[in-house]
Length: 263
Image (tube, rainbow, N blue to C red; front, top):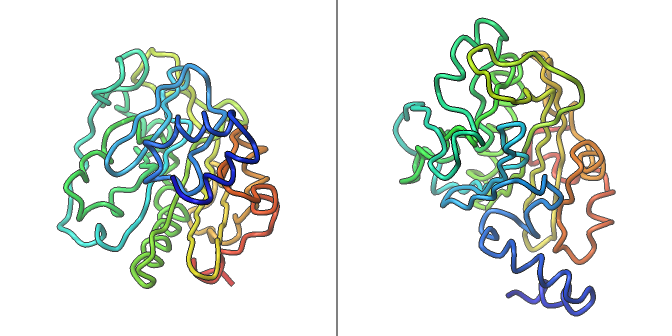
């Protein structure tokens, strides 16, 4: 364990030790700890390119965490071959046919949480097409500001050579129309959050983003920047639980701004 983690444990005692141990296998994808507070019935899965917490009630992951590195960005065009999650029971997730007609009926795409474009050079790129990493996301959002923000993250990783850590997930603030091709109980998200973090010699920089499903295609993602505290209140999750000054980091206005192409 690193020096930072040892300090936290000495101050906060056995509770923090248990939290760190529980999430230690996921540490490669989560800077200062993966999100806490997801539904107690969730299944947490750690894969080579991301970690997630799948909610069997919504049928989608409450959060997905991944690391963007320039070494994984360059590769051939990859196919979107959708697949049920092999580590989940059929009752806990969706299968590819259950997305049928969703684009025509609801105007949604199969939206990646950990994006395929960030891993097209990785041997395990196909894992991004597993449906626990997918949600029904508005085509306007998915192909507009969400895509542009993901592109800004890749550009930052490419230009800086740094690891860029991302946590992302859905929100359920109001009811949405159901997917037409499934009878399973599920909840289509009303919106999404994303938290982006880097750490270098100068310190830690972070920016949060909040989008509702009907965010216009031409919207500027910079206009949707929020504090981590804001996203915690919306999602009910706790972020950066292993950071020594968690409260200051979460309440501060976003500091990862210019690096993401925002004024």
